Length: 478
Image 1 (spheres, rainbow, N blue to C red):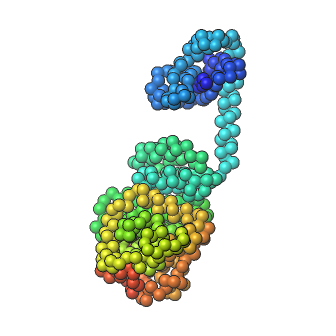
Image 2: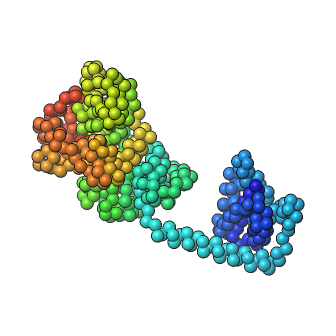
Image 3: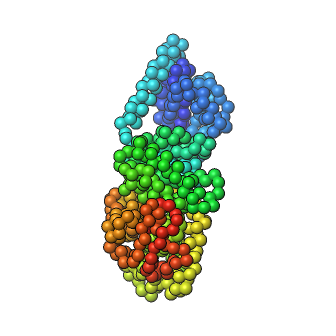
């Protein structure tokens, strides 16, 4: 089997003559195959330069012809241009071309017209498809690099949903954004329609259906709580106004990362009040770290542990609730069917480790952000988004930062969220089982309510009180 690739400028007369000869050979020789590529004259030189650089060839004219090595793969074998192909056909097959110059020019113009028509048709077909517009802020980050392949895999939004990814960041990060865009295009995912870059704030979130807020860049060290609020408030105010102005009416906004997640979520709710009930904070990263620590202790995989609940500040002071946590497929004297589970606390005999080392290690991880890399952030965001779109596993409780209704704790002016179950785009709070967790709440408008420092209860017991520290925002229990 001989397969040749014929590429050339759409208006090139020599390409037209080589094409006619190749079609004749393919029609009369059963083992001869030809693949044709035409490029518009405006982009031909750049396309040829990139092709030769990729394959380490030296060629600068139209057309270019090479042979694909079907039997052993590889980059292909360069044959040359029109003259080399004509000589090859004459020597190997005894065939030549007798096309006149006038006919060559006429066919070349027809090729150009056909090429332009095909391009216009392709653009019109793209216009008929309304892809899901996904915007990612701070897109030059490592988390975005790991997030793009997951979003384009079809696992998050579904294999039939086409998406358009928009990378938004500062002007000085444009080089990284271009690199991320090229990496995304190289994936050649059937779900990905386009990738674009935005560095102008006024153009951000235009027609957005999904907005992913990643960790923003911090240029200076933050020493006080006031500095923290001042550093985040202007950016969240900008994002909020742009979301109100440009985003789709039912846009989903998801806040992830490892720093000030609750604060950013609360500020976005304040500055984008229309979308307040469609703004959530990702807590699966902290939940995953807790499951990993338990799995190491029990010598099982983290996927066997379910219903670990995170209360409090997602990226700050929080409380891990193990009272509902269950273990599946645990190797012991007691075995059962796949749906059989056992309480985690009944298998953790070292209560000293649970009450001390486990709590301290998770608090250290949350405070420092260690081991919360780009891959963990990406998978946490993608999984949360998947559950939001398609529903979480039946019967499983997941940690999620959402805006709570005042009736959840029967306390006015207290904004809190509770463990949730995602059921096909509808979040259902499971608050009835947890109202007895809180015996005293001190509401303080626009302030986080988190567990007080030095007063962390044991993971297997109930927290007795919540006090308002000076951290701005609202309380988001996950």
